[in-house]
Length: 291
Image (cartoon, rainbow, N blue to C red; front, side, top):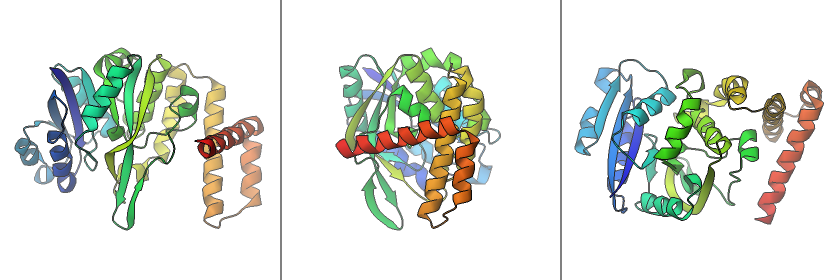
């Protein structure tokens, strides 16, 4: 029988964890599923071992808070034998057919290292909405410019792919939260491909305490340190930094903070990379219009 290992990192997660665990146990896939909850240094009175026990999940408690990347890494390396690996965030959950469909996608695409699904975004103050209106571009050249996979909860990996790339990686606390971007880049640069399913089989909870609200600064050590380790060029680094400046400027203008000085400063920082970032952004817009 197919074996799937699911790692759920937890930090002050009692309010959310039960929903995530229940969604794993409700999967329709004909597979043996091992769940490993990794408590990332939560103080004892807030830990969630009792909730993990109710869902027959293994429980591992790290003595100190080390960040989600260390928790994910430790969990992946502590699983029993598995053919596939998934990282489910504590505040997300899966639709019942998530594993069934992503397993089928990987079976149909032997060169794919990981399968990605669309997601339904739920938040307390807005109607539910789809994450992607058009398919994301999961090519290395585009994922180098920006991580287009919002949550690792959307992804099922081949364990063989994880085993192949992990020697190029390390549980670096400095990039915790941007570590999923590093993993996708490592997989694609190793020659694996990704397969996408438009069906929203992941439910992504958007709330002020969610990890993605606090991640921008985590991109910088990834770009500075890990891009070279993956064999990416200084030009790759320059382009993604220019894209970040462009995104910040566009966001500011949309919020009414229009500044010609800021625009000139961003362009002058690296004119060639700025031009490349503008062209890339324009190509992405054209792609979305055609899709």
